[in-house]
Image: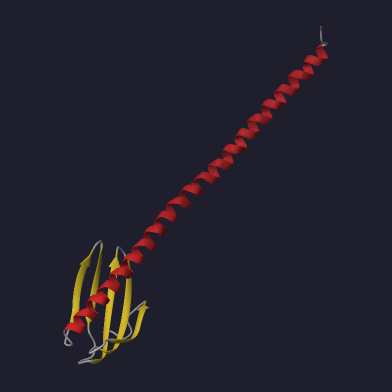
Amino acid sequence: MTYPISHLRLYRANAKRDGYVLLLSVLLISAVAAVVLPSLLFLGINSGQVGATIGQSAQALAAAQACAEYGLLRLKETVDYPGNEVLSLNGAACALLPVGGMGNDHRLLCSEGQAGDTIRRLEIIVNQVSPRMVIDSWQEVSSFSLCL
C-alpha cells in the first residue's frame, strides 16, 4: 500500500511536535524538582535540630528534678543543709543554689538542670521539713525570682 506524500509530511510534523511536548514536559518536571527537593532537605534538617532540642530540654528538666529531690533528701537528713552543690549526671549537670531560710519551717530550695545549651529551673517552697516534709510549691520557672 502506498501513501501520498502529503500524509508523510503530516506524520513528520506530528512527530516533531510530540518531541517538543516531551522536551518541555521534562524541563518543567526538572524545574519543579529543583525547587521542591532543597525545601524538603531543609525541612528534614530543621526537624532533626528541633528533635535534638526537645530531647535536651527533657534531659535538663530531669536533671533539675533529680537535683531537687537530692536536695530535699539532704535537707530531710540535715535541717542545716546549705545547698550550693553541683552534680554531674549522665550527659547533663545540675546545680543546687544555697537553700533559703533556716530551721524546720519555710525553706526554699532552687535547682537548675542543664543539658547542652538548654537550662531548666525549679523553685521549691518547703513549709515544714520534719517530722513529715510538707511542700507548698514545686514549680518550673524561666528565671529564679525567690532564690538569690
